[in-house]
Length: 110
Length: 115
Image (cartoon, chains in turn orange, blue):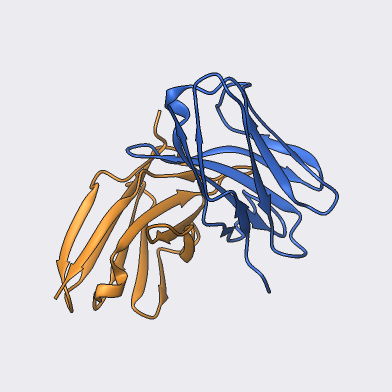
């Protein structure tokens, strides 16, 4: 039973445009979420996080939005750059575990 | 500060064998957690060790086990390997551990192939 879902396995975006990566979760008790980025042959690296007391968090070109009623979060990357091409994982952080989604492969083309 | 180090980088085994993977966390980090990455399944939590004690465990069979040493280095062991165990195994370290909202630092992983 997948508690954190990323329904789009891949996304292709032109350089300079906005990339929107989506993530849904099933447990309304989840109150903290993180996004990690993974390049091939490397481990995931932390990108941005959000607490359920907020509905938005920004860090440079990256913004995460949280819609608690819909149990949905999204990661916006503006403007997208070729170096953003990677696999993005969202994760929920309940007590004592970390639950990842299946990932979305983002490709940014010139 | 050195990052998280995993060895070996690649491993090929046959069904029925056992394997041991190693993870050296960032200096000062007491938590080491392990994950399995397979296509279509994302990253699945195996277990977490904190100060030499297993603190949390995911939904994996008992063939998957681990331990942590006093220097926080951790090993993961898989016994009686099956074809489905072929995956990238990642470890991550942090000061306070998973579920504390603290970000994790991952190693580059060990790619295990079971033939």
